[in-house]
Length: 387
Image (cartoon, rainbow, N blue to C red):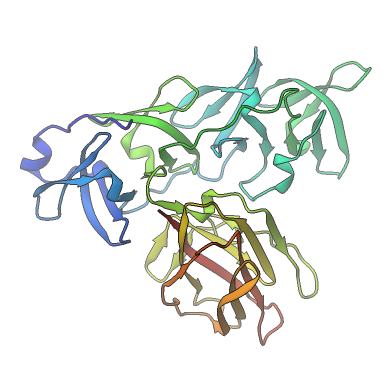
């Protein structure tokens, strides 16, 4: 259930409150600027641009994104705590307390996260296929390339304590660590429920919620398996109805994420960022959802029985004038769309491809006419529309 409180009437009398101005996207993918007024488990109440109050069925809502994204000095800073349910908490480790990791998130304070739901700690939000692998021991990869294995017994802002098998605990300086992959629980991780609401902060932390409640400028988030968390509305970049009819591809985990350079270099796909880690921008538009890739790129996804239509656009920033790529979409390895010689400065038409009974689909960006020079493509708002 999703619950929010009604904002006070002065917002109507004096004009929209800046902190509540969002762009509403509905399931027909139309967009309009609105003021967020109230929400519950069936409707979203908004003020339109002409200050008329309107109820929109929650089933028709895809997301609310801030009209003007806020600059946030914490964005991209800190480590990424990756959770099995898809949450991404950007911040600083505090300590291990019982069966939980205490993690400091800017604007939210210290959060207690169950270890059994934690996959690992990363330097950035780039997809790492090894997160979901089964492993018997915790694994720390150092900047030198060395790998340490054992049991992580504690964490702090400065170091990680690791106890090797048959040895004494040793402190590892956090600044020397590239990533930490946690061992799988003996009985396996509990099955993760899909969050009906996903909240994204300006700092790029992502939290799946069972419900949210808004009172004035104070937003209370209730995670699926945690205590309520308080933050302010101005710390929020977007609120997504992830339990609705539209499933963003960047929120799904591919079964294969592969980059093959023409000569050398590594450009793994990045989710909700460009391939170099920046915001997804094309001209004057900024997009919250998308995938940044570099040729040659291949992303493979498994499809579920309820998946009905795949929808996306794609573009290359006008700054990359030498870019030239071939773009393909495959269903069960059959090509259902192909654009050859795609270059910079053009946004593709919207692709809307019926999935029918396909089991997998693949997004490919191949070398075009210029090797792989500046071939940095953005899949813009790729989504699965479910039945």
